[in-house]
Length: 169
Image 1 (cartoon, helix red, strand yellow):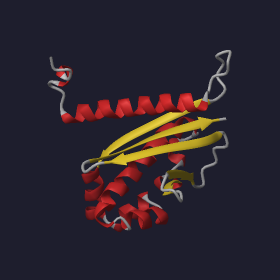
Image 2: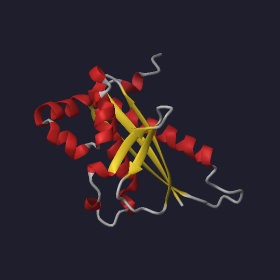
Image 3: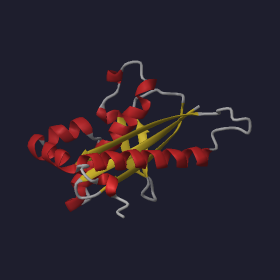
């Protein structure tokens, strides 16, 4: 018996949506367990917002090749451009992963914003720490109740994905 029988008829896009959902759920469960957000009486101690995004790398590549520097300057900070350009042949994968990360961050913090237009692409910066772990810097965004932002990004030849967990005070 084929254990993957349920996948008959599901196209590639739906498989990616299922993978995205599974990735989000597993990451969310991990964070809940790691943070021990419930006390011994079952009362909630913190609030968690999640955001996730997936994008085709070719969409970012086409935008960079067709629109050029104006696209890069509108979406990415100088630090992000410098990092992605240093990746040479894989630069489009890194640009796409950062684009997905910005989208995921926006989804996670949008409920905290008074106006969704009060934030722009470059207000969310994705950089790597000394060990290479991606970090989020919110530039010019005053959201005092954010305690921590955890980011996970991944990419393959065709897709880049990002998952964000925002822990609120």
